[in-house]
Image (tube, each protein chain N blue to C red):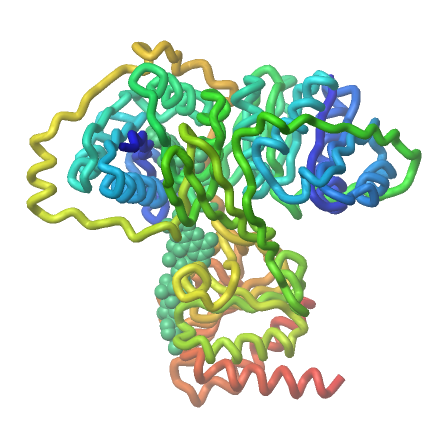
Length: 258
Length: 319
Ligand SMILES: Cc1cc2nc3c(=O)[nH]c(=O)nc-3n(C[C@H](O)[C@H](O)[C@H](O)COP(=O)(O)OP(=O)(O)OC[C@H]3O[C@@H](n4cnc5c(N)ncnc54)[C@H](O)[C@@H]3O)c2cc1C
Ligand SMILES: Nc1ncnc2c1ncn2[C@@H]1O[C@H](COP(=O)(O)O)[C@@H](O)[C@H]1O
């Protein structure tokens, strides 16, 4: 009977960033948001473990009131309990990890905490390790496969130089990558049913976390200006290909890259 | 105030040291390197010949392959001993985990994937890419206490030479470690140039329809004496290659990158930003990759590639 805690972030859709065209300042408030790509897989994996072990899945999100949207989605997918820890804007990973750890202490213990390996927008890939560090439990990172047996969890992950297989006793924190599974798509019926479910709220304050305590201050976020030459040749008419390739080669020679 | 640097390769230490010196100049008094692994005294010797104040060496079977808990303990021991306030790591999967563990247990700030370091009003100011590499975030470290991971290939490497630093051998007890590494299969790359170091990279995307068609890509790479790589779906979904280029894969910085049949999603383009010249070949005139390219050809890769390879071979033959 595995009890699992999953963290999902109300993340910016990075493909639809809204920015001020003049200053290139990113307008986070106006940018559409969704459940993170890896977070959704964390939830899916938790649900699969729950189904196998007759377990229980609690989902939390530290985010603005709008983040209820992704908690509804979590209910529709099959979560047992969903909590919003309301904040005006999402604080840095230091504060978020403190909140998750305190939630674990007050509402847990859980056998597993499953998070995405990286959030879609800030992509720090550090939250799992931070939570594990605070709780003094193992971190099994970047899992592309999870197996549970008795009170032990085993994962497989790629860490750049090869494939690793790690094992530890639970409780533990596991973070998952995109490869791990294909998340389920809830049916319309599940979605409608989820609308009647209650989303619980606990303020970070109640957990004893001061959201102003972060050690790193973000002073600005600016979109990159793409400074490429954008010299484009149209070879959709195949008879032009030869001539265009010659031109391209000439350019590349001038650039000194051929 | 001392600064700790930790990487896996000679080159990592060379780059980390350049960055550490920016901080030492303003607020630091010593820079120490930590070397961890098995049979790696050569690396420690090499690092000791950088202009550095000392090298701590953990050389033991237990460090043969990465285990977050064990590596974390080793680093923490040195941070405690040297009273370090700044810990600089080469950015990769492993150090993100080590960084997270160190920052939370030592109550340090944490910034990953740093590409720029400077000072403002006596505080360390860093920049890092966010939003799948579409934007740059400026972050200020309060109290100048932090773990920082630095993107490889950004800070220019410090040269070897100069006085030799002391190498101090260290060990830790791992009897009570909770987590075990039960298997490690190293990645085998045979006879091909690693993507990270290649001067020319040819990238293939889903415009390449069959695995056999990758031969055209490899042929082009061979002609230009470069490496070839793919987008995530080709590696992770189809299994045509062991790794991919982009935010969740490898970052490249060649002189020339040719993106073939690649749409140019931000998760891919964030990994190619360091390329000097980018060429795109795509049949869709509206493909976002063209905004990211210096030169582009709109057209069918199956018609363009054979011709391009033929012409390039002629030219190479001319020389
Ligand atoms: C969290 C996360 C992390 C990710 N990390 C990465 C990453 O690190 N790297 C990465 O690459 N992706 C990554 N992705 C996936 C990324 O979002 C895109 O899905 C992926 O890059 C698209 O690959 P593609 O360009 O090959 O395919 P597509 O987007 O399908 O593009 C194929 C292109 O080929 C063109 N084409 C088709 N036929 C032809 C032809 N005959 N001739 C010429 N052109 C043709 C089409 O016009 C199209 O533009 C990530 C996604 C997520 C959510
Ligand atoms: N505000 C948040 N609320 C809940 N979970 C979060 C939040 N931010 C990040 N996470 C989780 O932590 C993972 C890694 O985030 P990061 O370390 O920022 O890349 C995400 O994939 C989520 O599962």
